[in-house]
Every structure is written in C-alpha cells, then in structure tokens.
Length: 261
Ligand SMILES: Nc1nc2c(ncn2[C@@H]2O[C@H](COP(=O)(O)OP(=O)(O)OP(=O)(O)O)[C@@H](O)[C@H]2O)c(=O)[nH]1
Ligand SMILES: [Mg+2]
Image 1 (spheres, rainbow, N blue to C red):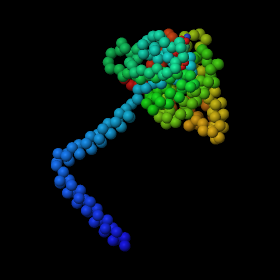
Image 2: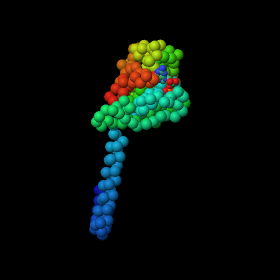
Image 3: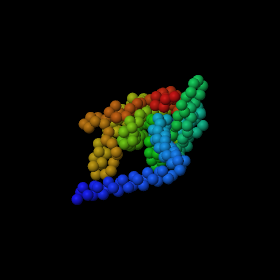
Image 4: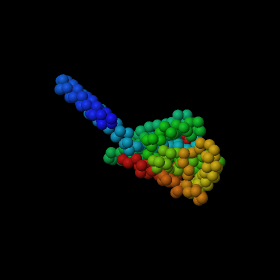
C-alpha cells in the first residue's frame, strides 16, 4: 500500500518536472534571464541590508538625572561652547559630528553620533529607542548636588545596568562625575562607592519584588557579596568632567575608545 503511494508520488513529481522543463523551454531566454536577474538582485540587496544593519555603531548616549549637565556637555562636544543647557530638556538632542576638540587634528576622523536623553523621568523611556545601535553609555552625575540625588541616580543607573540589551551586548558605561570645577564637588571615588552602596540596597529590595512582580530583566552582581561595579558583565568606569569649563578629556577618551576614527 505504501509502495503504491510512493510510486504515485514519483509519477506526480516527474510530471511536474516535465511541465516545468517544457515551460522553461517555451519561455524566451530574455525573460528567463530577467527573472534570474531579479532573483539574484533581491538576494544581493537582502545581504547588503543585513550587512549595513551590523555595521559598527557610533552612537554615544548621554544619560543621567535632570540637571546633571548633559545638554551642556553635548553642546561642548559639538561646538566647544555651552550656549544652551540652562533649561530642562523636553526632547532628546541628537547630532552626528566630529568632536569640536578634534577639529584641528589632521587626518580622517570618524563622526560620532551623540544623543542627549532628557533626565526627566517621563522622558527617560526614549533611551530604549537608541539602545540597539549604541556603542557606549555615559551616565552623568552632578558631583556637587550628589548626596541629595544619590538615591534617584542609583535607581536610574540600576535600570540601565539591568536592561537585557545592555547586559547582552556588554555596552560599556562611563560614570561621569560632572561639575568638578566647583570646590564642593565630591570625588569620583566617593561617588562610585556611594552608588555601589545604594545599588546594593536596591538589589535586595528589587529581587524581593521580582518574584511577585515583573521587575528588571537581569539581576546584578554576585549573590551574597556586596555590589561593586567590577562585578558587572559590561565594563563600568568612572571619570570626572566639567561641562562648564570644558574639562572633557576623559569623556572624549571614552568616546574614542569605543567609536574608532
Ligand atoms: N558649575 C558647573 N555647572 C554646570 C556644569 N555643567 C552643567 N552645569 C549647570 O547645571 C545646570 C543643568 O545643566 P543641563 O546641561 O541643562 O542639565 P541636563 O542634564 O541637560 O538636564 P535635563 O535636560 O533636565 O535632563 C545648568 O544650570 C548648568 O549651567 C559644570 O560642569 N559646572
Ligand atoms: Mg538637558
């Protein structure tokens, strides 16, 4: 019974093949070449678009609480002047440019795509849009008004550090302690330790929540050990800057490390 079916199928396949052969012979060769051409072009186009999607990214995200100095830093990087930045941003600032400080350098430099994401809590979700093509994230911290904001800053940073796309792609993060031109600014080591402490507290409270609720996508650090940035899968470094007096060399170094000229 099964053999009969197989035989029947064979005959049918043979027939289809014969029909196809006849059809191909009937079609004028020019039409045939055109069809093959279209198919090859489609495959080629598909491969090229895939390649372009995977090109090395050149986007640097400026994130951090409102008032930390992101917009001033954005303007300094682009124009070398802080003509904006005293009002709270309502939209992301976005631009692709050669860093102002590198304008005088000779040779070919790769432009950087910088996005300044507003720190207002309702606008932070914009961050997600840029994550797929990001080369590095800069988390700007106000080093002067740090203590009163450390809890809020840690919460925002915790959310970034536990995002699946950030962890999986091992996106490097720079904690940029801004406003060091002021004598009352805290040191970067103090800020790092304080953020680690706050994140450690958050970790225990949020893991308790996560079993009941949908919480963050990844758990941070090593269970049973106090949290330290060195435990993160992605590289987290700390640096100092002043957007006001254009002391941005450590930030520019970070950018050049991850967006190569
Ligand atoms: N002393 C000093 N003040 C700074 C520095 N950077 C920024 N500021 C001041 O901090 C305030 C906030 O700066 P912005 O750049 O607008 O802050 P932002 O992070 O863009 O804030 P949002 O747009 O609300 O997210 C401004 O009044 C700046 O003048 C700095 O390096 N030193
Ligand atoms: Mg701003």
